[in-house]
Image 1 (spheres, rainbow, N blue to C red):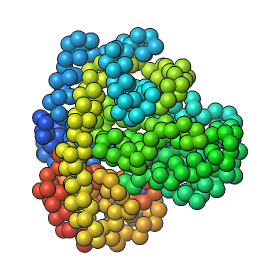
Image 2 (image 1 turned 90 degrees about the vertical axis):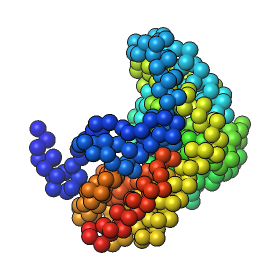
Image 3 (image 1 turned 60 degrees about the vertical axis):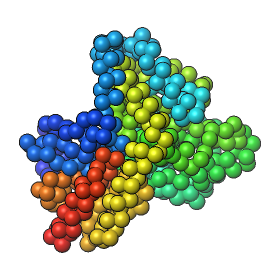
Image 4 (image 1 turned 30 degrees about the vertical axis):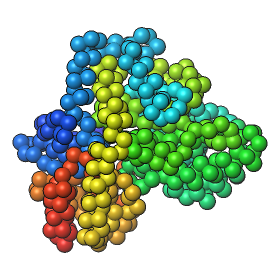
Length: 412
């Protein structure tokens, strides 16, 4: 079964394989756990982790998880609505609402689960969903499950979005976008999107209110001194005619734990509790996971952009400038997610040859003790190495990657 399809993937250099870590090196407050992995009995510098602040191996998270496990056990046993949750779940939601400056928040089991649960619940028949063409699969799947009309707008093209908003008729108009695009590393122009929505609402006189649905998975803990993309753009939720804002974020990236949340107005959260299928029909996250998220949130709040977050951005600038000086194409990256594309590649979307070149580059880096996997179609249209920099990387780590790239650039 699927033999022919798999053979075609192999021929087109698109076949994927799972590589499991034997262990993760590091541990402690200054851990390098997000920059060191062990596979096949060899240690590698990893540029593939979304653990932006290096918190996944922080002792504070482990200690909080152990304490919660002693108190609550491991498994939750049921969904939240069947008493599978704990007081820790409620505490995390209250603290996330305060952190994101919203009335309420709700914990979900993953970012994808949050998107495919929330978007169909929020956008129904008679509504129109406007989605950036490069949105993450979670938003795409959530839109597909919705009964609302779906409209794509060109990536970060505000003229296109504005025209579509005026053209389309709907009871509710919902603009869904990543804040940080997970493969290109660029940032959605939220200030412009907010302004377009504000003007549209004023002209509509309340007849077709706009809603912003933001996937802040790669912005939380990274942008806005850790508060996320809205803080980065100095946008605060305001009453009509400002658009309603719904924020999805994850605990599994910069916060080093697991799970996700929706932060929004109280009535929106109450609606999701009653209609969000992924929330209603999923067993609650274990209390030990929630405790780790609480510990991580405390660390980010204490950091205030001056410690780990500052180091993250210093590392990002070092790698970004080094890549540009070597002539590599980094696309429009503005964040710790940096595409690496050899300068001689044609950038033909989905070219088989380009996928082979990127695979060869990844293999050459692996031979130098650097783990940076190739990203190919259908995940992206243009094959690339997707490098993610973290606060746990050292200057020597970054320089070693740059040196390896310099030596391989002419051999692909």
